[in-house]
Structure formats: structure tokens, C-alpha cells
Length: 154
Image 1 (tube, helix red, strand yellow):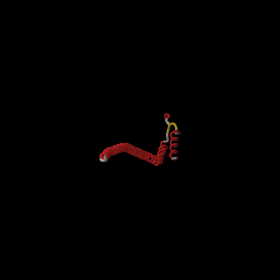
Image 2 (tube, one colour):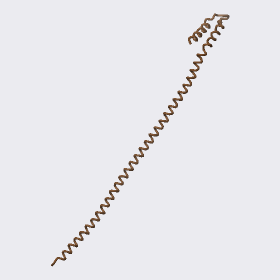
Image 3 (cartoon, helix red, strand yellow):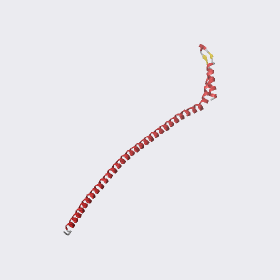
Image 4 (cartoon, helix red, strand yellow):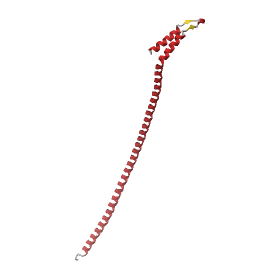
């Protein structure tokens, strides 16, 4: 690279340091300039090739990086949507579970009340049955006492 810069400086000095010719124009040593240009060409191709390869690779790496970044963003969005979807499913399941729990509690309360009402009705029937039997027993006792009173000697 140093040789390249030296040749460019030498070409510049040749062009600047040329002597004045006819009609005020500068006289340039064309052969010397052509010689310097040829030397530049012989040195430049490797540097230019390296620069071109670097530029091509830069574009390639830039494109690969953009594709990779796009893929990462797309994957992240897909994952976020999946998580959001799972979150929505979980919320819906929790709401349904709460609804089922409320229905179960209501069913429990209803069944408990129905059982109490049934037992109360059975106990009332039993109470009425026993009350009727007690009344019958009382009547029988009274009849029994009455027949005993009538049979006593006078």
C-alpha cells in the first residue's frame, strides 16, 4: 500500500512540477506519466481486488445479517403470538373453571336445601303419624278406663 501511495505522489509531482511550454501550457513528460500509470496498474489490481472482495462480502454479510435479524424478529413475533394465544386460552379456561365452580356451588346449595326440605317433610309426616297414633292410643286408653269404670260394682 505504501508503494501505491508513493507512485501517486510521484505522478502528482510530475504533473505539478512540469515546465511551461508554448502558449503558457505546461509541458508534461508523458512517457514518465504513462510509466507511473503502468506501475500503478501493476500494483493496484491486488488492492482493488481485495477492496472489491471486501465490498462484495460486506454486501453479502449485510444481507445475511438482515435475513438473520428478520428471522429473529419473525420468530420472536410468532413466539409472542403463541404466548399470547396460550395466555388467552389460560384466561378462558380460568373463566370457565370459575363458571363451573359457581354452578357447582349453586347446585350444592340447591341439593342441600332440597335434602333439608325432604327430611323436614319426612319428619313432619312422621310427627303427624305419631300424633295420630298418640291420639288413637289416648282414645283407646280413655275407652279402656271408661269400660273399667262402668264395670265396677255398685
